[in-house]
Picture 1 (tube, rainbow, N blue to C red):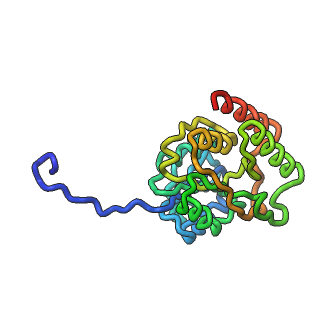
Picture 2: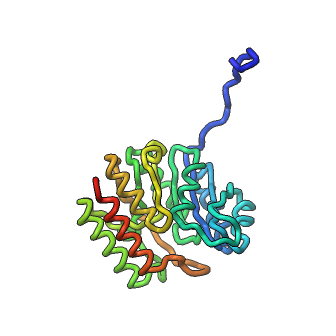
Length: 241
């Protein structure tokens, strides 16, 4: 019953099965294509989290059918990938939440494969580039070595060997997301999600995916600074694991 004594009317709104969360910073050249391809791949909800872009990222995303959220104010210093993803998670309303980049390097067409892993019982499905394929120009030699090294360190600290601990293309069950207290601000968000998922006993699997070359712009990852932050996060999260 409602407050005025009338019978309550059941909502006909059905939660979408899949939500795509896309953190974005100055990706006006690619974001519309990524949004459209996510929708075509079955994402019933697409959230683009604009982290203070100075270009038309938000406009292009909205025109393509995404809901645009803000991690920071336009023109201000970006708050970080971790903040953007957490903003998206807070708004996501679906059974499965998929994260991917807005630069087109993560093929949205692979989204159903990640979702299928969650539907089959996994709680976190990592889209592993190293178990899959890299397109021409998709990764530099130094980045390949750096990612491999971080995965080896993770294996040594947590006793779980994974091919690609830093992959940002991944799917999470809604039930798992509710159990993770995420606080990362930058690129360490990926390792925080993984470490905390293992801590609560979640089933984690890797799914081979492709990685494409960035078509426009340059990566915001700063190898030394962000690599150090990721290593520090691994150590910090290991305490009390």
